[in-house]
Amino acid sequence: MIKLHIKNLSGTEQTVEVAPDGSLMEAIRDSGFQDLLALCGGCCSCATCHIVVESDFVAPEPMSSEEDDLLDGSDHRQAGSRLSCQIPLTDACDGLRLRIVPAD
Image (cartoon, rainbow, N blue to C red; front, side):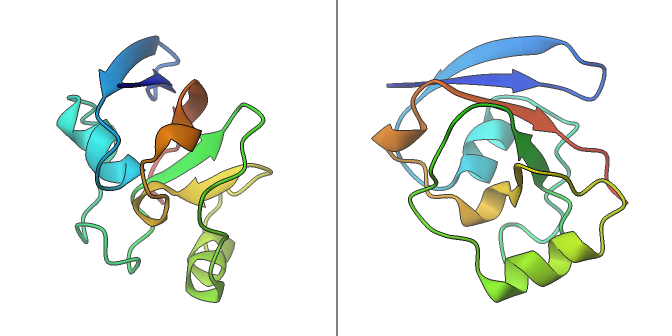
């Protein structure tokens, strides 16, 4: 199991344990975080699964140009911004601290 430390939009942090399967977006959504809209279901087309990684973390997959373009359109982009649908949930994610970002 992988531990994720997730802050919702109100700043409350919750630690969840999830199996290393699917995407980070799916793990957040399936853990009951309704602040993460994920409207496109993980197709990298809406940016409503925007998160900010708050810990030292090297994602198993680098940011694609499509993800970078979508994040450029966000008023909330900052260092550590990623689309959670684009991060595979692997053992490398264990201990990850992240914050859900408001949808634009």
